[in-house]
Amino acid sequence: MTIHHGGCLCGAVRFQCSGEPINVRICHCRNCQRATGAPFFARALFAHEALTISGDTARYPSSDALDRMFCPRCGVRLFSWRNTRPVVGVALACFDDPNIFAPTEHIWVSKKLGWIKLNDGLPQFPENPA
Image 1 (tube, one colour):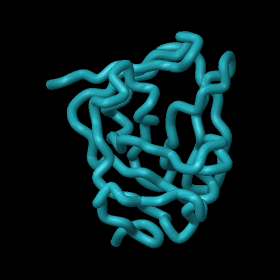
Image 2 (cartoon, one colour):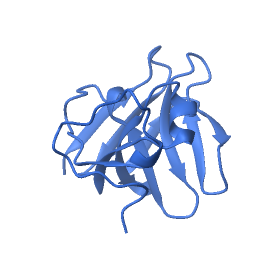
Image 3 (cartoon, one colour):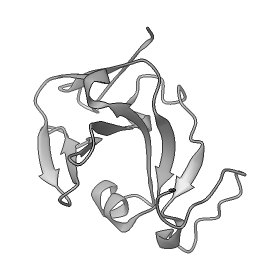
Image 4 (cartoon, helix red, strand yellow):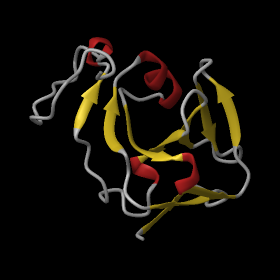
């Protein structure tokens, strides 16, 4: 089984994901925009049990369904931990090889910032796909 490694900016938090992601998406929802301070959140979705974390993380419950996990030392947001399903979104840019997974679709494009032009040919969903 393939193991993918990554970590935060300061190195205090390291992680590994085993296997392949369930999906790889770019989320344009307002919660992701605010949580990252960026126009979108690009992430690979894994089962909880596929993720191993070393180092201390902090959590912020951004909704009943989702906790945002980050490094308390450097502040890098690493994971979006689902409380309603046993899955976790891992920030693509935090993998040691940030090109290891390519997104396959855009979600929540109804909240996309107006100046973002999506011309990559990927499927686009106004909210979450069914």
